Image 1 (spheres, rainbow, N blue to C red):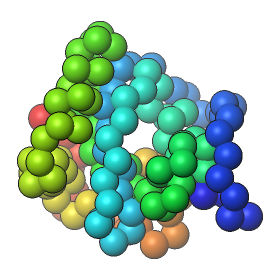
Image 2: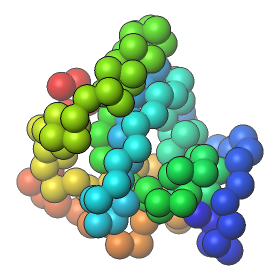
Image 3: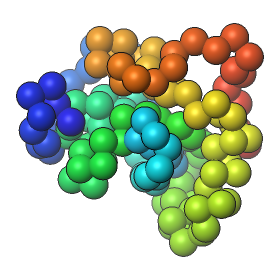
Image 4: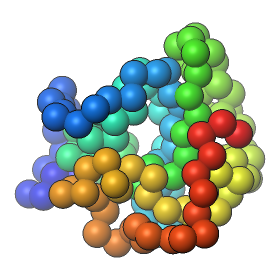
Length: 134
């Protein structure tokens, strides 16, 4: 959601370096009650779009402010196949993946866009060690 409370969809322009790898990712709301699974070729840009209300109607409607899990692939076809597999899977399996990579469900993208990071998500946990490949 944008700061004015409106959702919109458009391309984002970033000044930060980008992650140009096919990536499957999961987002959650602050209470960790709703999950969204997506696939992208540029995780930094897609994270920025979600944070500024341009990520799509579902993520805007349910305020999916936190990037809680991601996995990068060499080929987009692999990422798309995994996204479909995860979407068809149980919530329990999705939560297990998140717990293995990010046991405190921290916002993994908060440092990429600190000016728009979720204000309610914890940002610093010295015990957290991100593992990009599960």
